[in-house]
Length: 164
Image 1: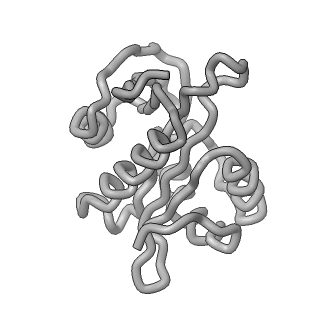
Image 2 (image 1 turned 90 degrees about the vertical axis):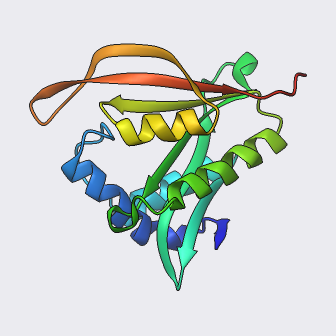
């Protein structure tokens, strides 16, 4: 079931996210996030943008949210999208299903340009973005330093067919 996030989801979201914090360069966060901090992040995001979860039998298996691309007003039709799936449920199309639902919500909100930001290498995320109509639009070299190595980031965009 896909549903909007609630603040009480924070502990399960932390369980998903902190795996990536502690074991991958997919996120540039270096320290685990506790439920109180995640609750604050949920509250801040959901004031203006959607955050959704994929829940099955009371367990959150993935989450996705949108956030402002930049703060200046002319950027108001753009957003950055994020999705994380529980490490034990990757490869089951849950993240793809959730990301698709988030894209639909963003287009319904009138967003014109959606961005995905991927730490490289991340072949699975690149394939996901390509499959969902994103095109690679940029690559930044060595912008993050984690686990003793420099990490590149690629930017992917999807333009809505609807124009203002």
